[in-house]
Figure 1: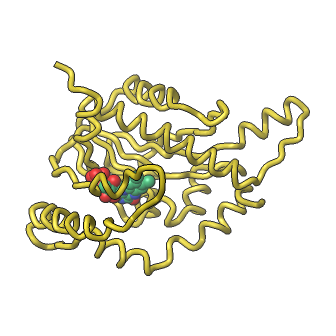
Figure 2 (figure 1 turned 135 degrees about the vertical axis):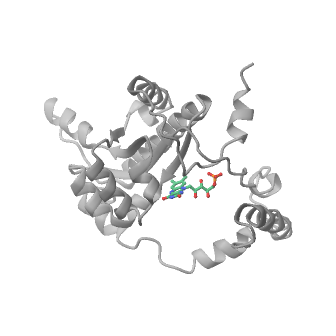
Length: 246
Ligand SMILES: Cc1cc2nc3c(=O)[nH]c(=O)nc-3n(C[C@H](O)[C@H](O)[C@H](O)COP(=O)(O)O)c2cc1C
């Protein structure tokens, strides 16, 4: 019996260890077509996926992503790029002068990419595969762009490892519904109390998953992470690629 879509979604957990079982190319293409079926802002279709097969390139990408070995070893590695380059070419072809660099276009292309990728991820999971997104590619995004020969108006939003799971990690608990679902207005009076209880669930998750090595609540993680700079090179990089100029 096929499981319901909602059940499938709630079974999600990132997979970072894959079996050697190859993913046939027609299967990869199905995942991409599922991605393409996602809604796309003003029908702009601003996502281009680069499937990276070359082992040398994979090794380089694994290193750029902060030595994430599964980037090199996963059966499939995809880089999801926000792409307004093809739109620029089309405008030239139509002798129309494209106005680029708008923040709105950056948002549109990035959202398009995320929706595309998540559709592909769900499609992969529905076929018994596992995935992990690789935002780590943005650690050394200049080098990634050079390696993949990305033109102006294209940037790699994230990568994705795909393959058949060789691990069965527990599902990571998510925030309580009351924290993420509001009625009519933004109201957060009760949120910290709810998050305190949630911290306990997250601590328990880590306790069982790491055998007690990493026992941290969610709020501890967040408050430790957000006191650090977040890839401060991104604005210069994106402007260099022609995004976020106005
Ligand atoms: C855009 C994005 C980038 C991510 N980048 C990485 C990454 O570079 N390496 C990694 O191991 N996991 C990465 N993850 C996976 C998250 O760590 C993971 O989704 C989160 O901890 C929740 O765990 P779960 O997916 O198992 O539910 C990324 C997830 C997203 C959505």
